[in-house]
Length: 351
Image (tube, rainbow, N blue to C red):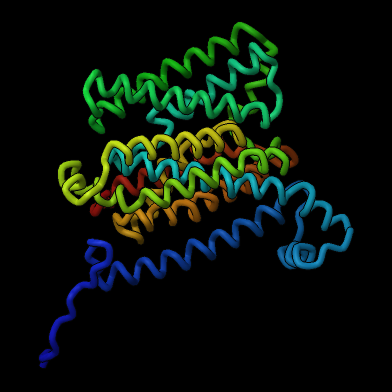
């Protein structure tokens, strides 16, 4: 009885895989792909003029010039595409920041990246009269990059590298300052206040396909850099000295992570005005089924984050008919209870 030899855990990329983890990965990947497909269909079907899912599929596969086809292709498809692109950007940026700081509750907002992008856009509106997403994007990149560099300089305090704790503290402090300055600029000029108010709440409705096309190359570059860094981030999880002994160039990895986060968070903020909670909650949830392997965490976050953004956008169209609630408001409302549930789990997901 029981004479069979016990199976050894499989090992890939230096990470030991148990049978239960392999099962969770397969089931989790299938669930995320199915949820993303459903979220895309709901985003195309739900709105002021609701359409049956079957009718949505018909006009997607065979555009026929009907009213339903016009609604899907001219109104809802661009909005859905913005949700997918911005969601993936914020999700991957959050996964990178959490891996870099080794803090599962960190995200670009905590490091002041979103606040820097928001302040730069506000300055662009106030001083140069910027009014379109195509104009916002350059200010958002500049603000995100400047905030990221400033946070690292403040966090390092003259040393060669900042610790994860001082980095987070510097980011929180700088984010509060930048947010306060942006609020001051909007309050002293009513025109700036009106221009920035709706953008700052986070919305998918004001961006068209031309704006997505302008930002897409930056998001794609950020995603490629992020995927290329996942092996080095797995080494950094073992500690900087161990990573260096394994051949990882720690300084270069940190710089490239900052570049990727700037591209992703800056581009996502330019498209939507910033979506809170996405980069914080999604990577944490993805680790439930991927484990700490950053290759799978980053890829899983790129697929799972758009699900949260699209479902929150659909909910915003339903609860306030015939108007709608901005998706940036609802990502926080939807994400907060999930994060509380994650934090209360007995077995917290480690990085």
